[in-house]
Length: 206
Image: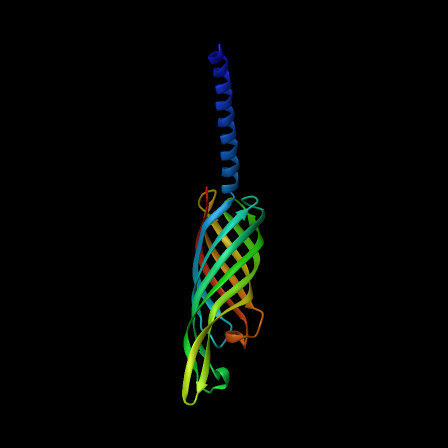
């Protein structure tokens, strides 16, 4: 008798677990379908400063879309590039210091995307932190000792991109960006702007 009563209880528990698992999977799939990664761009950046040169730039990002199109999104981006520098009269010396510096921009912002099923345009104005190592020179008699110091400064990037979709959630992209450093410091004593162009690819997590 007890076994007969347990059988429907087991069935109810099994069905309940299956329904709960299905609801969990549906919720996960719904969220994951709005997450777009990997996003990867490679391009070229033109420096607005006389102290650092132009450079290749690589961009990667993760993006959450409230809807696939005609709606807001949130993007977390990492832009990285290396550039040659030539610093004049550093630390009151008359010697030039030359080398290569690596920059990393960690950026976060909302944006908006609009268009149709095949071609879309996004715009965003991101802000965040630019990290790099800055060379300093100490003069001791006729000997100059160069040391590297880590720096972090505020930066922002305005981005506009066109996306050509070859299925519902995967696209090739062409982007234009303008990066701004808002403080006259280190490599940007004569200007803090830089602009660039890049091409890339983006797809959804699911």
